[in-house]
Image (cartoon, rainbow, N blue to C red; front, side, top):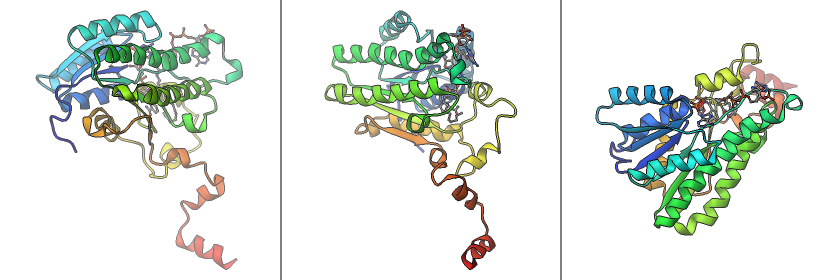
Length: 280
Ligand SMILES: CCCCCCCCC/C=C/C(=O)SCCNC(=O)CCNC(=O)[C@H](O)C(C)(C)COP(=O)(O)OP(=O)(O)OC[C@H]1O[C@@H](n2cnc3c(N)ncnc32)[C@H](O)[C@@H]1OP(=O)(O)O
Ligand SMILES: NC(=O)C1=CN([C@@H]2O[C@H](COP(=O)(O)OP(=O)(O)OC[C@H]3O[C@@H](n4cnc5c(N)ncnc54)[C@H](OP(=O)(O)O)[C@@H]3O)[C@@H](O)[C@H]2O)C=CC1
């Protein structure tokens, strides 16, 4: 889909890049020639991912840094170390946490666990990178992973929905504030892209009323490579006029509720059912 050197010369940090979608995105960035930096709380996970990438892609340039994004001092220290080997070009705010629970049962610590990682962590990373870009007079690019509940809200995952909505508001605020300085920011809302992390946290046995594909108008789950190419486009200079946007890639899932259950059943009607309806 892209030239093999699309991201050559770009240094890109993917937070939470040791697992799941962050890992897939990082691999795509390496394939396209980027210098990749991944961070997370578990060094062993990061190093195992880096070793896997080096074996798959000889010559790949990848660094690992431990950082708990909830801690602004750790974020500062990470950015300082990262900048020592050259400035960052793209920040991907991908690290997140989520679990399903009845909201009235949540403790304050449970609310904070999600808000601190998703909202505060994304803020700390954006500010630490943005300040350095502004001081150096360099352009910058922030891509933040949110989710469709930023539009709709989502029952039983209220802290995640609220935190991601906050990340979208941060993105749009800073797109205006930092636009004149050449810094752009966008959000991506993926739909159902299976990862062990998300599926363990969100879809325990017995939680689904139907096959997950049936809730998606395109009738299938997303493939990581489809999402990764969107992140490649957003990281590339060719998307340089895009800022403050929210791009949903979910096979139409978030709009499924429109029209309610009646219209939803009609998606699977055959000709005979449509004909019978006209004859009534
Ligand atoms: C797919 C897309 C479709 C599309 C639409 C769906 C959109 C989904 C979008 C988002 C998807 C994702 O983010 S998927 C990413 C999933 N990956 C992750 O979550 C990985 C990171 N997660 C974690 O590290 C942990 O799960 C998490 C608990 C959040 C943080 O760990 P910590 O060690 O910091 O915290 P702990 O000390 O264990 O717990 C902190 C408090 O939270 C409480 N707590 C922990 N789990 C709890 C639970 N299940 N129910 C209630 N409360 C809970 C504890 O009891 C503590 O409160 P006290 O008892 O009071 O002390
Ligand atoms: N999979 C899907 O279908 C969807 C995913 N998303 C979003 O995609 C992103 C990736 O999710 P996914 O890959 O599925 O799940 P994962 O659980 O695999 O990814 C979460 C990553 O975040 C890291 N992380 C968590 N807390 C912290 C922290 N405090 N500091 C630094 N890193 C942290 C984890 O590493 P470690 O534990 O080592 O710190 C892990 O690598 C998230 O933003 C999620 O909300 C959105 C919609 C759908």
